[in-house]
Image (tube, rainbow, N blue to C red; front, side):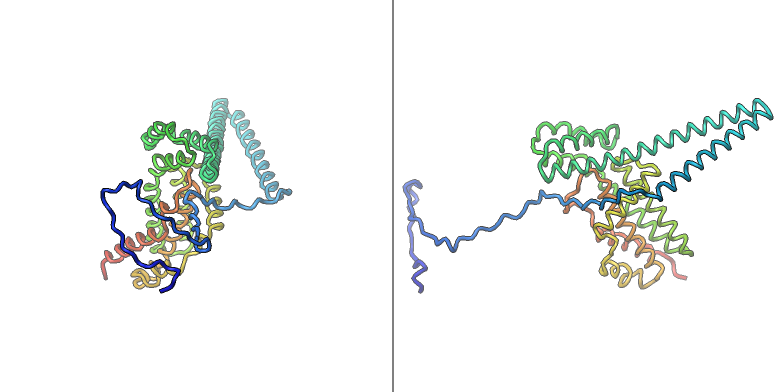
Length: 346
């Protein structure tokens, strides 16, 4: 036996002996054999996707062209309306005043639409600021950022009946939690996470609709139009669910943000295993190639929906709690297989 190892010995422990009187000679351990395992980095770190590269600040001739054309259109519309009202007054005073009333009503409606569009863009900007403050509070334990995020979050969900319980619970425990990270996690658990289930149902419903209807649409142009409309509606529903309330312009801006998020994270690149699971080796691909194409469109719609949740969700979601594309694909494949099996054979 090697001399470096201690020989085995037997010890008798007296139960009546006091613990403070039992002494053991410390064994010297060579420093070369001491190893310190690094503590794994915490799960508190939140990975924020990189920001979009800043665009050039030079003169944009495309924007100038669009602005000039829009100004000419407004002038033409104003002159046309003025000429029409003058002709109505020349024919009859009553027709003239009727034209003035209709023009005023149209102007009021246009003003309301402009205000709604501006309000939708402001709501979308507020969600972005909440995301930035929440990420800073989680990454740097910043109390000021957490306070701003929670205040804006309460303002966003104020007045919604489906968020009343979460706001009440958050207000009760807000003063009891001092740590910024824990306060953000508390708001996520009690308030924001309550909408994740409905977001899953929205994505699954739109993906199923795209899968089934594009499978039976005869023309490819109708497929593209239908998929685009369904995806825009899905983005609008998800943004409204999380407090965005997008209008027309803000919906297109949200679509651009989602596409940018997918481009940064590489989300549009579907793996071969996912495609083979649904199309190549699945029941749908064996029965009908058209159903396989519809399934691929449904998978892409589901992927866009997951990216929309990442963009519209005011608080960053933990990795283990995120909805995965695999689960949505499995649900979509099961649904499509059931539909195919239920189709009567001719």
